[in-house]
Image (tube, rainbow, N blue to C red; front, side, top):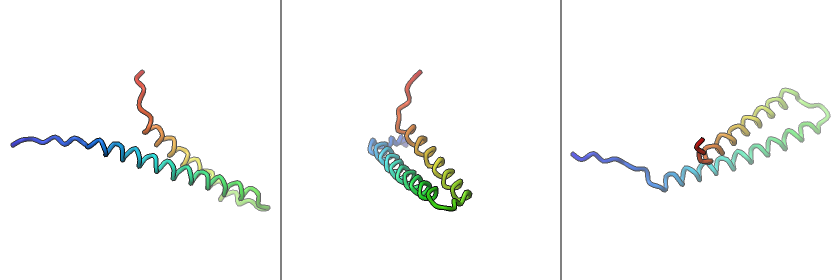
Length: 79
């Protein structure tokens, strides 16, 4: 019997890249929204410090996810 080696089609890599780019766009939107919420919260008379801390932590997590995905799109540079 013949052994078939399956090569992924070129389109799959492009689709993966497009999916990563779409996810980055979503995360950037969420990051911007979190920034807006944080700024509005800081303008209130009484600031809920726990909520503020959670929003800032979420914002940092989103930024880390963006950075990780952007690295996946950048080709490795040989040393």
